[in-house]
Image 1 (tube, rainbow, N blue to C red):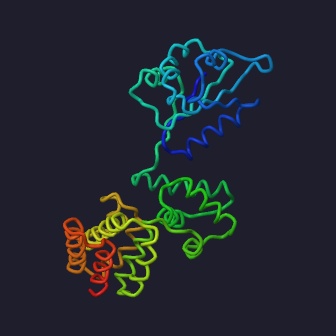
Image 2 (tube, helix red, strand yellow):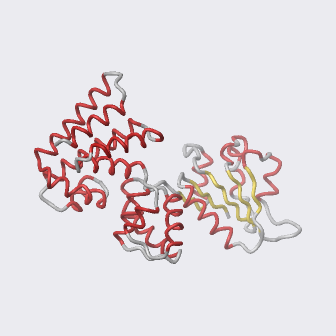
Image 3 (cartoon, rainbow, N blue to C red):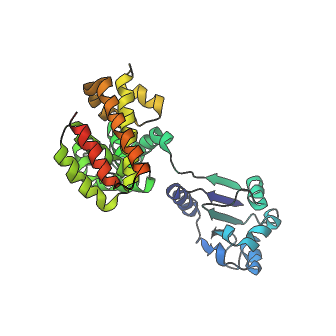
Length: 302
């Protein structure tokens, strides 16, 4: 029997591997495939040892060993039923004959990273994972956590671990306890500008300059300015708008009061401010952080 665990979602891949190992009553044999020799393959694939009739053999990164990867198809139909081989291959070349043969003969499980379209899936996962850790989170708290942390399952897992220690969780506790991801930091920056707090804008930019990329920060700000404008012209709740444009409903819900207050003309001015900054950023050598600050100060004065 052969199982292939593949994909760049290392959290889900690790959990799947842990599940396989946990279900095996003996001791798993682990090998780095990149270091294996051709002569070792028969011993690994063709049956039990003097000490065990059933074996679990875990081989990581065999695809990096081109010689063994290329000959693996020759062994697939000859493998012993007493050996369960698990290949761990985060990024195999799916164009190779070996991978195509594995798709036919093996149990191939793919674990992709979550994208923006998986936010609802992430929220459901957070609720269930929290329950496993003895923590009760409702849908709104799960939304807030996903928005604050992002879609990295390792980071979400560690955030849930941290909250589970505290017991009862409120929106304020999440704000105080969980470090925000760059998107959340940028929202707080735009929020300060929309509230007219130019002094806080400048303070936050000084902090963000230490660790954040200015071009990514500007891109996130411009995207949120666009979302603000969409909310202002949409004649529907922010949750429906979120579905239409593929945005997170919690994030749009936080922007919605600003959109209502500014109206179409106000949000249009903000979009124009960022459009002008974008042109300047692409056509001159002006410090991007300076352009970001100037754009937000102009926004704060509206």
